[in-house]
Image 1 (spheres, rainbow, N blue to C red):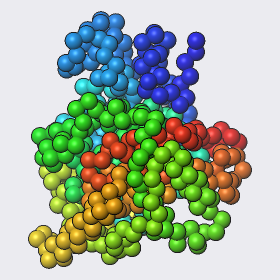
Image 2: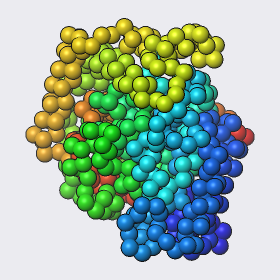
Image 3: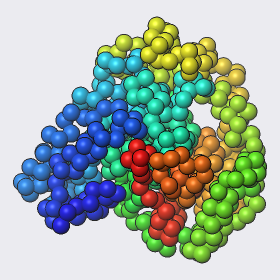
Length: 513
């Protein structure tokens, strides 16, 4: 029986491994070939790990030896499916997640080429111990979209511009773009992205994949190039909710190098998140429908299919037993979603300078040692870094900040008040989650470190260029909740996904032509 690589899930891959109809080496080679063929078109991958095949060969030797299912595993005898779900599975990492190997970690910037990290990022250490194969580094918006307010989404000096695989001129999302596109285009099984505000949710929504933005602190940020540790989080990207959850189960947990993980560990269920992959997960859930908050956006776009798609999504939620509450008002909503009004931009500018400088100080070797150095480097290499086109105003504004600052203190206080208002809204209405169209609502959960999951919800078939995917480009749906509510969100997202099964692989434009 020939194994179907495209759209293969972790469970299907592990079954094929068990039946000896597939090896990790064959899987890695398939993805390497796919990257070689399609990456020149969609630019989703910056670099492939030159040791990936050797690592996959090591996985085969380990299986044949019938020793423990992976290094450092505490299981008594192999195979142990739950703890070994990622064994032999290729994973791409956003290029701001450090690896202590032949892959550089640069956040897409030429300024960090040649830098040497002290160790693997905390989440990478967990992936390796689980037997996952680090396939390479994914493209992104340079510096995770922290450099300027006019940056081209998905562009970096090292990787070029990541393209939506469904439609050449379609929006590709920002920041974790390559992580989402690589999974959507079947260049890898799963990937990791990072989110500060929108950075997992948005690219997953517009590229037809599942993204989990965990509670801040649920996953370690040690070894991750930061924007602001107050909001930064690392999360999985996959083609199915179950695959994303399998990755989440591996990467969550305490890391002494990221102290916030100690507090967040209280949210992690003893038996992992896989137990919440229940088909009837929507039954009885109370969900706030935030459509009315976003309706004005679509009133100005009368041809948009989003209103009808979202109303059909709500119908599905209700049919599967959810109690969907309309017209509940999130306090100060219009201010929260406007970073220049909420205080988010002010706080961010102070924190990016502080947190980036701390990251640079821990590098063993680096051409740059401060945000000021990066700004100077970009000026000296203006052509390569496309400084005239995209600028670096956010970096320059951040460099001009000073801590402590009354402006920063006031911004943080404003944000904390908005977060308290949102949490009160959720608790007073006894809500399990809220639901919003596309990636709308991501900022609400970003400023307070709350979790969210996006799932494919439909396609926009308008204005499809000749040779593009006839489905159009994807539209997602967002479920968000309070800190530690991942288990509820997983139940909701999985039940919705299984009821709709909207995800379809792209026909990459040049392939269609």
